[in-house]
Every structure is written in structure tokens, then in C-alpha cells.
Image 1 (cartoon, rainbow, N blue to C red):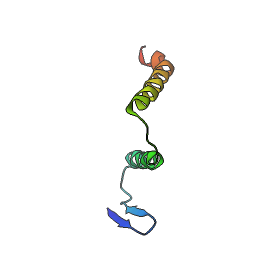
Image 2: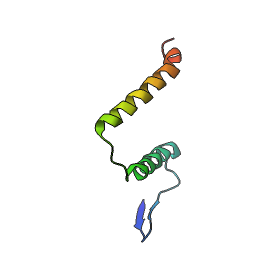
Image 3: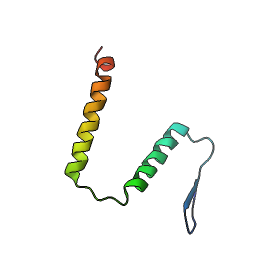
Image 4: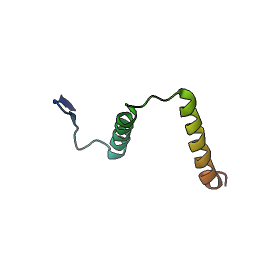
Length: 67
């Protein structure tokens, strides 16, 4: 792995043998960090949104998981 910093970006070079699903997870996390870097939100709001997402997910997936 090679990490290079330029004036405008960080470049990461990985071998082609890297698992693309795991790499996508890393890229998604980096994108998330980039998107939220300018926001200041209280933990209470984060918890509320998380609870809403989890409730929605459970309602959509409950049937297939409880068979």
C-alpha cells in the first residue's frame, strides 16, 4: 500500500488483490467522514436518527428474520 499526499488530495494505492467489498466499506466510511466533517450535531440528535433508522429497518426486515 502506498499513501501519497498532494496539495489537493490524498492518494492511496492498493494491490489489485484487495477484496473490493471490504474496500467499498472503507470508501463509504471515508465519504461519510467527509460529508459530516462540517456539521456539529448533538449526540441526542444522532441517537434519535439512529433509533428511527433502526426501527424502519426492523419493520422492513422483521418478517424475513423471524421465520
